[in-house]
Image: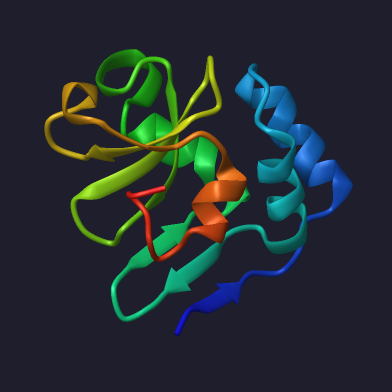
Length: 127
């Protein structure tokens, strides 16, 4: 059984401010999902994924030195509560699982869209 614990929705202003700050285009379904939830916890017997709050994502990416050092070309949006992050490849919109220690050379392709990522939970990373 899958549980999805959603956060409170965001205002249009909050989403617009976020989009202006990231300077790349996120997939439409990603933004639509976050407008309604501002992140969520996906939980099943097999998997746990913390979809970070949109209002915290930019700061978390800075703290993990995403762009500057460890994950160039990717934008982190979630974690498994342990050693793995989930990221969108900026150029393609594809979803990857990336270890917090080790970097992108150990990344694993998950699926092509955020829609697949959500719909196939808890089957990821086999989309």
